[in-house]
Length: 249
Image 1 (cartoon, rainbow, N blue to C red):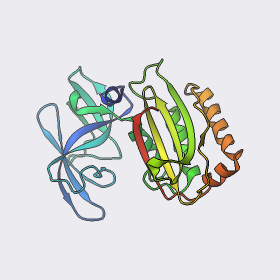
Image 2 (image 1 turned 90 degrees about the horizontal axis):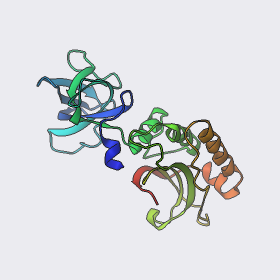
Image 3 (image 1 turned 30 degrees about the horizontal axis):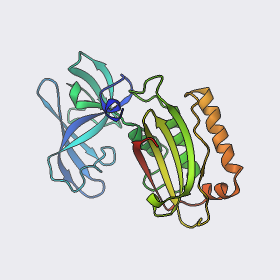
């Protein structure tokens, strides 16, 4: 399923197109020069600032280097060529934001990337959550987001877990997880203290996205306030966080 989700998929959903980072200049903000291969053989020259163009994957790498740009697929000519529009106002030197490119250069946004994007759109740093409640809202949006490549009969559910685990060096941890068939995407939030926090969870809820899932998420949130220790954890300041995507338990 992981590879299936990463292929070019539904028109209108967020995708990535593979381009080539040529040069990085400046410090803050960093200016990046990117070349995007078009279907007619030309290369569009794109100049943009980080973080509008995400350079985290190439920071410190030798250039030129492949670089994924967020885009929307707005049309397709055939199985070999698609029409894309770059996101976040990114354009080439000619002011264009729409390009015809090879379909093989375009892939669907992965579940973990969707979760990261929604967090960032809510001004929550996926790697430095400072407020659990602020992170919960984008997670609820993620829980309702259509996932390209997920079949109707695939398992799709949500769960909240808490505890102190060996894989987090026994740090108190709160985890929001959405299961997608044989995979799961999670926001893992860690805290200092809470040395007596027992392990627990809300149980998997497999209500389908839509009103039923919205009601389930409301029940999950209410369950937090019904548990004294968990409520204190929810309102504590986290010490770290991360988004993960791995095989389901």
